Length: 226
Image (cartoon, rainbow, N blue to C red; front, side, top):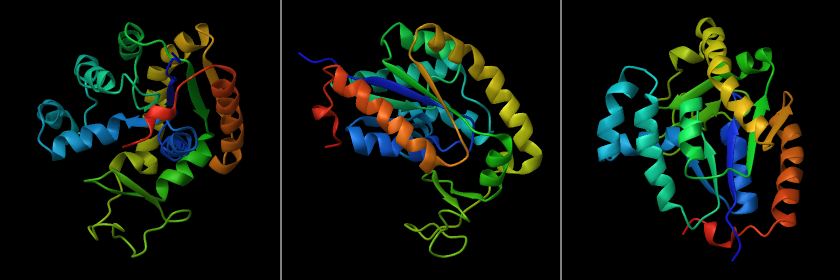
C-alpha cells in the first residue's frame, strides 16, 4: 500500500503561502489545511475548538502552543487517509516537535521573500475578516472597491499589515521560525525558495513536488476534496 505525502509550507506574512498552497493542492491532489482558515471556521461555527481560540483571536494574540496542538492534531487525524499540506502549523518548535511525534513530514517548503516586496504586498492587502479572503489592490483587486466579491461585506486592512507594525511582525516571525527551519533542515526535508514574484517561484516548487511524488509511491488519489 502506498504511503501518504505529508508536507508543510512556511513563510512570513505576505510571502504568498496561501496562493502557492492552493496551487499545490490543485496540482497534486493534496488536502490543504490552513490553520488560520480552520480557526476562523471554528469560531464562526461556534465549535469547541472555536470557543477555545476565540478569546486569543479577538484580542489579536497568538494562540498558545498547547492550544494549537490540541486543535490541529485531531484535525490531522481526520485526514489520516489523505496526503496533505499544512499552512500556518507548525509555527513554533514546540508545535513542530508535537507534530513530529505523530507524523514524519516528507517535505517542508520555506519561502524567502525580500522585506521590500513584503512591505509592498502588505500595504496593498485588504481582508474579508469573516472568511479570511485576501485581496491585493494591485494584483488581485475586488470587483467592487472595498467590498468582498462573495458577500459584498466591507474589507479591512489589518493593523499589523501597516508599515509601522510590519518590521516587528517580520522580526518575530524570523525569531520563532528559525528553530523550526533548523529542525527540518537537520532532517533533510527543508527546501527554500527565494524571489519577489510568486509566478516565478512556482515553477521550481512545481518541479520539486513533481519529482518527489513521482519518484516515490505516494498516494494522492484519495486526497481530493469530496
